[in-house]
Length: 382
Image 1 (cartoon, rainbow, N blue to C red):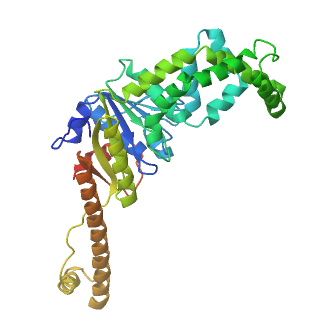
Image 2: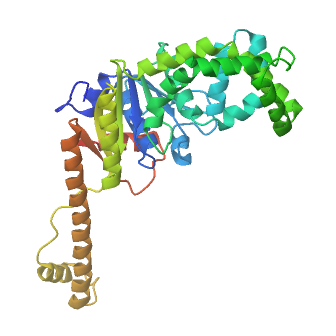
Image 3: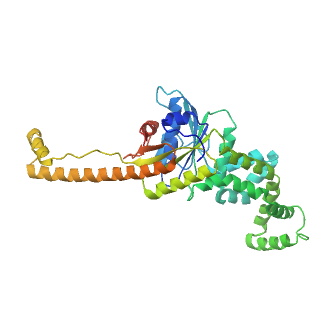
């Protein structure tokens, strides 16, 4: 795998070396909470951090002050003694895509024309892969500014984590394809000239007219006329976004849960990052059960002592022994679960070749920044 190792470094030192931190993994592993916790940790240590999150749970959104923020970055209050600053932003796909159109549109008039186009509004809410591409393009845009010295991105939920890595190059490849450009150009021409003489495109237009209706077809053609003018801008930004993934200041953290299928997915993702020359900094196994240690050995002796010192709280030694037996059995099951997770995590660490950290399972959801910092403080290298 590519990138420098950090075999003995703590996570704070890893964060200190990074300009862009991308938190990735398969769905359901807690990427959003982990990303927010790492952002809070870096801000407490002195960085000016923007956490860009995707669809956070309601309690986490409230903790970050995102409940009423829309798509704007909002400042997050940090505990007294923190040396940096933290902002959070919940990326809304449609709003971010509108901003993207605004950056590429050749004129304010063309921008307004596109944003009010019904075909564009439908595409912006349904286009497959739009969330991944918009997130990466927005990250590239933010990286070109000096407002923050650390950007933390929680990658979009996807069945395959690699969708995010592939999105910029896929968009650029499509926009560069001569067949695609010729097809769009042919259909866009229909917005300016008669459909006669368009050959195959004319036949297709008549078919689309019957399917969509003449009004929707007109708006589709108007969108294609406008979009054709922005090909080069989109292509350039897509290439810039793809290169950003491989930049020296960009680092990835892979998140998994302590289950074999999740760890296997994370290992494959780590291998793929290495194959693409993308810098894997570390992995985090989230929701680890702590090892409770050995249970008490002699429950009979413990029961007798509790009977003597319990002040009459227990009705009989027999009932107390039964209760202690059940508690010990639960302790052993919990211990077995924790050690099984540790064994799986150890196998994952050997395959990974990068620092592996465990983040403990919490019995209650995170509801404030203090809870996020507690999570980050609980990170332990395994």
